[in-house]
Each structure stands twice: as C-alpha cells, then as structure tokens.
Length: 152
Image: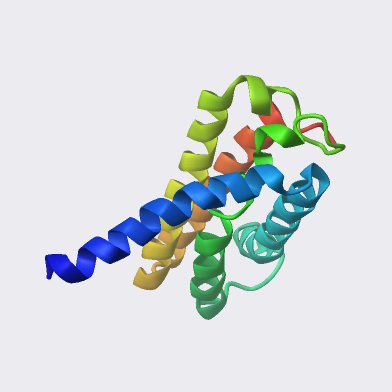
C-alpha cells in the first residue's frame, strides 16, 4: 500500500510547488478576471437561494440542494486569484486584502464553512433550517465585502 501511496504523495507535493510558481507567472489581470468570474458564478447560484428566503420566488428544495453543491465548489475558487502580484491590478479589491491577509483568510474560511453547512442542511430537506443557513452564508459574504471590497 505504501508503495502505491508514496509516488502519489510525491507527485502532489512536487506538483503543488510548481502550481505556486505557475500562479506567480500568470498575468495579474488574468488572475483578477478569473477571481471575478468565480465570484460572479457564486452570485448566480446564491441569489436564487436568497430570493427564496426573502419570499421573492417560491421555495424549491431541489434547487437549494443543487445550488448549495455548486456554491461548495465555487466558494473555493476565487482565492488563488488574490495573489500578491495582483495588488496593483485594476479591481474592486481594497488594499486590506493584501495588508490584512490573516483576516482575509479568516473570511474565506468562514464563507467556505458556512457553505459546507448549507450543503449538509440542504440534504436534510428542512426548509426553515435551509433558509437560516442561507442567511448565514449571506452574512459571511457581506462581512467580507464590507471589509475587503470597494463599494459598488
């Protein structure tokens, strides 16, 4: 078993180092576009959930499960796009993204944690629990935007 796992672990370790180098060589504006695209997709799948909570559209349990699953993947995507070489690129990111990296990372982790809870709750099917967790995800998104994003 160890003979099979060692080459895989080695490949992941070496590959991880190369991926960091690859990110540093990507044009800053490309990284900005990629992170913005990931955030746009998060909105595409989150706003219908929020509209269900707010009573703007009917509650749809199947859509809640599907959108929560999409958000689980999407909530992990934009963060590599905030590489140090994007600091001076034109975007809505405030300087605090690059100066208060610990708090920025805490916000990322909070969002991902709240989305993971949404995935779990949505599979249970309890409409009130799902709606409460959608609100928790909304708060996680909003707190990061208030601190790290220019007002639109």
